[in-house]
Amino acid sequence: MKRLIALFNILLAIEIILISVSGFFLYSEIKKASESSSRHLLFTTKNILLHSKHFKPLKQVGSVKIEFLKKPQETGFFERNNTAYLIFKRGKEYIRLSYTFHLNKFVEDILNLLGLLFALFTFLSLFVSYLISVQSDKVFKYINEIIKNIKNDKKPEFPKFKDKNLIRLFYGIKEIYKTLQKRNQQINQQKERLNHIINSMSDGLLFLKNGNIELFNPKIEEFIGVELKDGLNLLDCCQSVETIEFCEKLLENRTETFEYKLSNMWLFVNKQQVLDGLLIVVSDITEQKEYASIKAKFFADASHELKTPITSILGYSETILDSEMDNDTLKKFLKYINVNAQHLAELIEDILMLHRLETTRTKEVKSCDVDIVKEELGVSFSKFASEKGIEFIINCDVDKAPIPCGYLKSILFNLVDNAIKYTEKGFVKVECFIENNQFTIEVSDSGAGIQKQHINRIFERFYTTHKGRDRMLSGTGLGLAIVKHIVELYGGDIEVESEVGKGSRFKITLPSLT
Ligand code: ADP
Image (cartoon, rainbow, N blue to C red; front, side, top):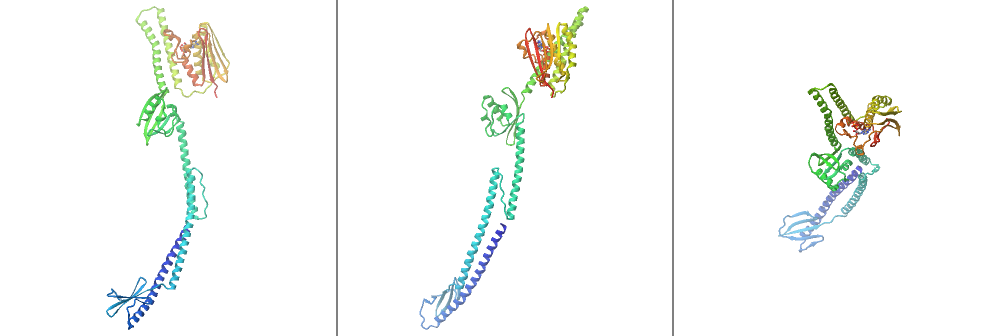
């Protein structure tokens, strides 16, 4: 290409030089020819006119034109516009002879040749320009094609050239394309990563620009309970009165944080004006809210439960201190104090256990030798059962339980304690076996049974079916809550079957350790 342009320039230069040289040559030739011939002709005519005796006012002698002037501006021989003039005085008047000369044959030939050469060079120049334009057209076509393919995300084809400059040009374009592709890949990867992060966020995310949705994740749709669409105004997506109210609050263009109850969910909204829009992050705080209210209830219940034995202890001890009493009454009062103190100790122990379970996030993966706990169970409850005349049976042939011994003991002791406590005659039976690859415990009794309306609530903290004084004597009201927490921590399940007057059966299943 560069070479073609150079050639084209050289041709043009030659053409200009040739035309200038021939112009100069022509000019001098014309000058020379006109000078010699016209001078000769005009002077000869002058002589004829001057020496002619019978001079008549002629208008023309051959090709020489004769004019009579009164007072010319100049006299003598001179040339102007292809015409030679000779002005001379004859008597009182001036005569002007003029002769318009024509180019001679040689000059005409030269001119024709020059014309031909000019046409030839012009043609050559046009041809070279055409070649250059065809070549550059081709190059532009290729470049356009490449740009079109890149725009349409198609792989562009790079043509092969022999010209070094074109090879260099297209190599450069190819390199730019490769860098672009790399950048695109990086941008896409980052976009994908960002999308993945945004989509897997447990918080809802929404970015609004002038109220229109620019970015959102599935979680925010789940929270608001609507289907969002890019580019739509947020309000156009919200339909129910409840969601419209919430969306209107989200659309208020200011940085703020607030809590909002939508349906059954408590949401924490963090709005921030960033860049040229509004970034909204919504978190589900229902659990925290519930936990806070449960915690408040727990503290109220716990202090109430703790107050009962303490009041009794204070009451009995003050009576002992303030009044005279015989030994038997004193002993009776001390026994009451002891019972209440024991209850208080149990209560504190259960509260601490429940607190530990509620704050435990990672479970201890450890199995337990069932025989040890079985033995302890027998030793601890046989006396209690036989005192009440109840048959106490333990059928446990499984070697290992998939939970730590402390927890197994806690489950069995709480269930057996309840069973004996609420059974006046008959039996209390403990069975352990493997069912469906799961460690299963069943504690059944032939006791009082539980009324239907209580069954769903007996696992709540401090929930007992007994009122007043009986309540304190029945237990802490935390036993089954503790059992349920342990079972849930180890991914197990608990079922209750009970019939009033006939007895109850608690069935616990725990998945085996993997
Ligand atoms: P408590 O300390 O009162 O026994 P629990 O949480 O262990 O507390 O039990 C909650 C309630 O469930 C008890 O008050 C009792 O009414 C009922 N309950 C539990 N086990 C039995 C059972 N085997 N038979 C009858 N009622 C039971």
